[in-house]
Image (cartoon, rainbow, N blue to C red; front, top):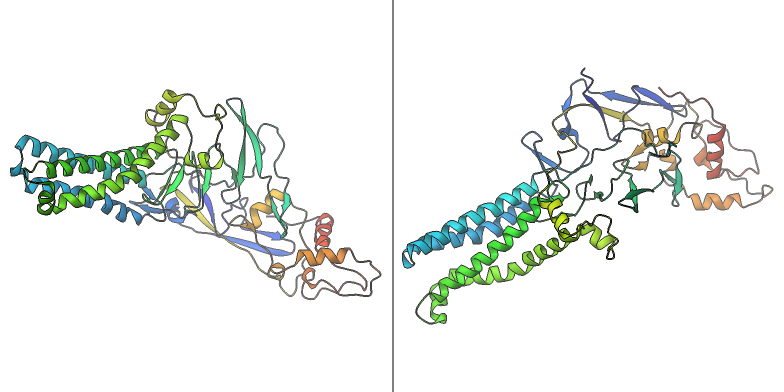
Length: 430
């Protein structure tokens, strides 16, 4: 098989170190690889939809494109048809000029809508390798216990310097990487996106580094189209020689278009002005609502001219992911309970990063079934009791079938599992 073909794990999104099975304690875990490579877009763990063999990338709510297309196309096409039908009532130069401009604006508006929706917004490839702490030379594999459930996680943030400012970047549990500056994880698409602005329900796609320019063109052309239809529909009413009331009764279509565009322009026009403000200050919607940079403290602000040039007149970077590449899919089978002939030996002495990489599923630890409802608070309270207490109850959660009970007076707690981890030495990892 070609070395360029990647091995993509399914279910827990991980890649074993070339092996087909390994041990966790005394339990064997097996992985099976498909013999036939598949296209990446067919097994992509995000929530995206793909068309044309993975060439077009849409969001999970791409169905909203039908509504957006209708809200834009129906009034605009109605206006063009109205101008065509009554073109004899106007000067031919005026009539054909207005009609042609209306058709061009409608086409451009719909074109920018679909260019925004079907492009990769800047999805960041998911990580399948150990996380190293760059720069310091030390590994960032040290795990930190957080929360009552004892979930182990990699350090949440690390500092990077941008234009003299220190910025914290966060670790993404789902994509297993430290997000680049200005990137964020979209919960709807389930992807980390470069220069994440927001997830737009009207285009059914994330707005990020690679489609923000087309989003600006889309909302700008929508605003201009609303103003255009509103203006010339009103002119058609005023051009009649009779009273305005009589003209409105004879041209109901123009009246409806005037009202519709008047209402719509407040929404789309306000959105356009807001994004021109963000563009001039080099902010994203996410940053504006989340961080609210004070004046002079935005590390990405280079001045109005350079900010606008960066958004509108720079080359769009290529996609970081080739969704059409061939990958080998690997299914990982995790046993939920040990067999009757096996004893549960606790967490073996294994590197924390390997444990995280092999036993996480969707960013969470996969616990044995007898740990699913384990109450850590009650167990820790037992630790405070004296050993001489007459209560000889044993925490059965720490014992496998067939394992002897603890001696009387001994309180088995959740911390005992941690002690067992230090004592366990030889864990077979293949």
